Length: 232
Image 1 (cartoon, rainbow, N blue to C red):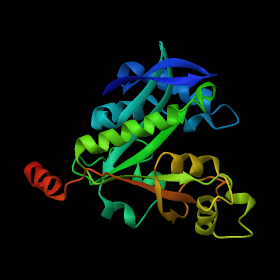
Image 2: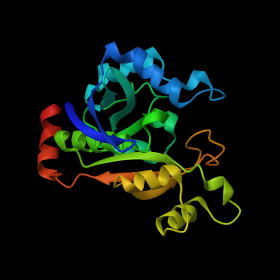
Image 3: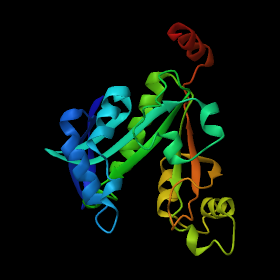
Image 4: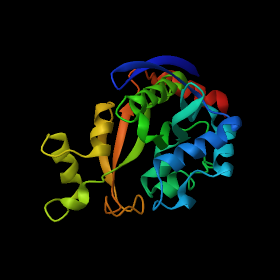
């Protein structure tokens, strides 16, 4: 994949590209993490070269980067999994193989979001939304039923004494509350389908995440099942 488009930075249109990242982009991808999550965020949680090599080897279609000029400004990564395998133990580390995606299943019926990240300078310019839209296009191209991922609930700790995590999600949907992550995912067209406990070690979210789905409107069950049989 490669496409070019304009985002509005400080009121001026700026051309960016969204494309698949490769092994040549590893240093830039790690720099995105360093800039987006500076100390005291633990550096051991930034992408490692070994993880990124797995991404571009196992599922290059799900490895996306946003670029402005020669600078990498955002990235998004996914893998394919089967719905049945993620139902029982829905923790980020289990679903994504701790970000290494060695459990990627080329026949999986779900494109699962591992990570999405935009450097602070380019936030609020729509880069994250365009990355998400591009991953939807991957879902359509692959002919699979849906995209799914866990969304942090960074505002939940302020309301945990008033409501459950699911009730918090409902209050955000109702417009009573705003949550930086959940509200972003809603604006991207994702729909809440549940809540996962112990999803991440995340004190702000009290370790919860909203499970956010996007259904492929062009999905054809017969074509997908035929492709599954062909790949056996």
